[in-house]
View 1: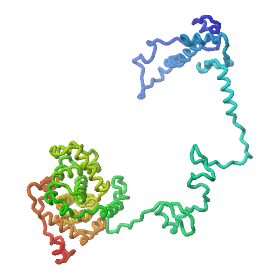
View 2 (view 1 turned 90 degrees about the horizontal axis):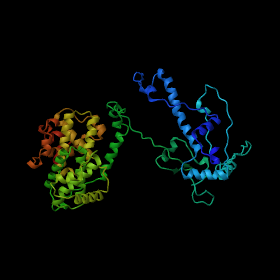
View 3 (view 1 turned 120 degrees about the vertical axis):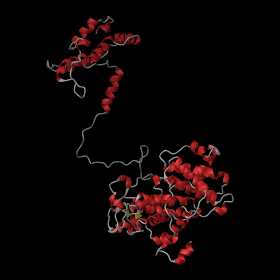
View 4 (view 1 turned 180 degrees about the vertical axis):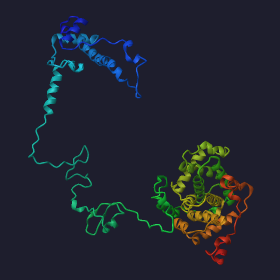
Amino acid sequence: MASMQGVRVTRSKANSSISDQNVLPTRNKRKAEQSPLRNGKVKRSALGNLTNAAVEQLADTKLASMIQPVKKAIKCAVHGKKGAKAKEVASKNKTEPPQVVALPPEKHDEEGDVLEDLPSLTRPVTRSAAARKTVVQESTVVKPKDHFEPVKAPQRRISNEFEKTSESVYMTALDDTPSSRWSTSTTQSDTKSRSSVSSFEDDGKLRPPTPCKVTRDPVPKTIDDFDMENILDPFQVSEYAPDIFEYLKDREKLFPIEPYMDKQPSLSSWMRALLVDWMVEVQESFELNHETLYLAVKLVDMYLSKVVVSKEKLQLLGATAMLISCKFDERVPPLIDDFLYVCDGAYNSRELITIEREIFRTIGYDLGIPLSYRFLRRYARCGKIDMPVLTLARYILELSLMDYDTIVLSDSKLAAGALYIALKMTGTRDWDDTLQYYSGYQVKDFIRVAIVLNNGLHKKFKEPLSTIKKKYSHKIFHEVSKKPLIKSMKLCGDHMTLKEFMDCT
């Protein structure tokens, strides 16, 4: 080429060099006025594409835009790089001519694509690049496959670093284990090994674990199967609901609360009732879930049963218990500053965080505590209880939070007793087979708890402890706190003798 001999390359010589390589000359760039995109009368489809009338006009413009980068690349190859680098390339080219791979001319049809006639751009091949290419070609030679060659077993590796040998400590789980040792039988004889991860049978064979299928007694025909009716609703988790509440009932024994007022020299049952009343007010102000309130009261009782607290720190304990419960049950829990505000600035954030850690350490970092409110909602839904009756049971159960005598009672029995009293007060129905089946209790199992709850309803609280009563006197809650009360003797009926009733009262 002319640039290799130190002759200046002009545009005309460059065009002539392009024509020598059988490159078709490109068309002149279309003017903007001739583009169909500037024509306002061109119709467009819903996807914004032009109609068939403008396709022929766009073909030349599209072809010119595709050829333009190729033309620019050819000019760069002819002129070389600008500046000092171009001079160095020219000086090297004088002493050592590059090897240019020329492509044989190909014949194309006149109607073929114009881009197919463009030659591929090639770079000068240096000696080092040619040597590397030769080495790569020699190393990547694929030998023909011999069909008669025996197939070798794949070599096991523990990792990318070490190979497994007979002396290696690291071995895979199924390495060198005969298949006869593993049994995949699902007969009745394998049931005793299903609950463990791996177990040995009497014959010494190791059997793999198999999934355990939970079998449940069928629902009696006289009882509506509530879980089966809602089996298609994923939010009901009907498949697991019976097992969940059986599990919660079994966990009640893991959170025992013993009477602690004798161990608290600075506190009294009146102070505790006052704290619970304030916590109910906080729950209403922040519009928290009822489960949040019940869990917070549980945390307070569990902490007080193990740690001595002064009356100055009692409200701080209640606020911190509410904060922990909100973190566990609320979607958007209130901030620490919110609880400090409702405490009227009596404490600071450092004190609240400190007692929060102490509560977690005291209860063992376990917040999966069975709550009476969850059991009540389960019983009412399975029994298809009306909302006014359920609201009355919620009022009875929430009022029992202030009663110190109920801290030792079972939460599942508290829920059953509250619902039983609500049914008796409204006279809607008795404790029938459906409620007995889903709760797992007969009336005689929780009648003593129901008497304790009913006695709490007859207590006359002072004015500072009237938050719950005012709350459920609203029309939203069906004014259930205004319902007339019944005597405890009427609750017993045939479920308790007079002597047992006198002992209970």
